[in-house]
Image (cartoon, rainbow, N blue to C red; front, top):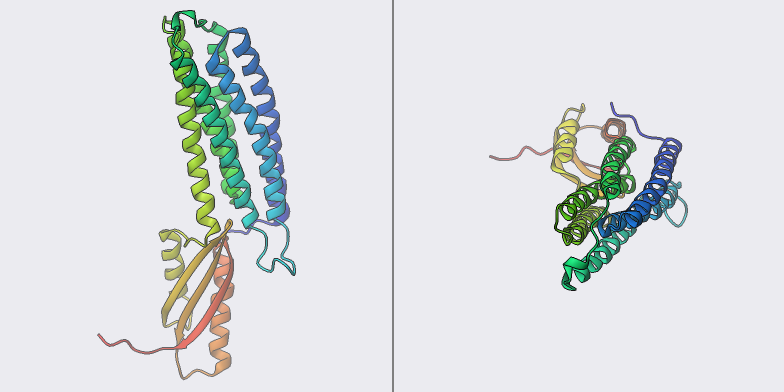
Length: 301
């Protein structure tokens, strides 16, 4: 049986992971900016800007998760889980703007020509790129593991923000290496590649958040598991209808079960309560179930 995460555990884990992200990104962005300026690398300076944007995104994650974990109230009887999706959408916007600005700057350098006047990046820029790849990949796995544990969309978005930074650092390293090999323009070409990685990550995060904002049905595997499990509950003779909708990082379920039509009302109600309680206990993502009872009717072949 999967255990439900308490609001306190959810908040503490999110705060801890976000704090690690903020400190790590501040140190890494300062190191990459210094390396980019000292080694005259456009790609590394762009990469430093990307890492700096991660600091702001982690702050957005903390705020979003704090608001989404608030208890239901009179004005929000279904809770505040969707505020985490809002945080993920804001993150995607930050990523998109960052990526486009980096791409425009790189394209302007490429379109300007005069490649022979471009400075060749120093070896420090390459070292900074390697360090960034290792650190950001480690931060990706750390954040992703915790995001999966507490089932946080905003934290998962932040994890992919780290991965996009690692990928952009790979692009920066290739561009720096190419520039040092005699093709200075490749440093700017790497900036365009970084732009593509970042905007793709922004799109994926945005799409996932929007799906959860518009009552998108849960995945087919979860739906099948729900269907199979309900059929095993004593007294359930058939499932007439089963619908799900994602509400932030939670799932709401509406199910119509068929029971023996000759049962007293209190027994039929007891079966419905069992379905409700067993599903909420068995499936950690399910926040609430509405169970409707129909009299069982043999279907004609």
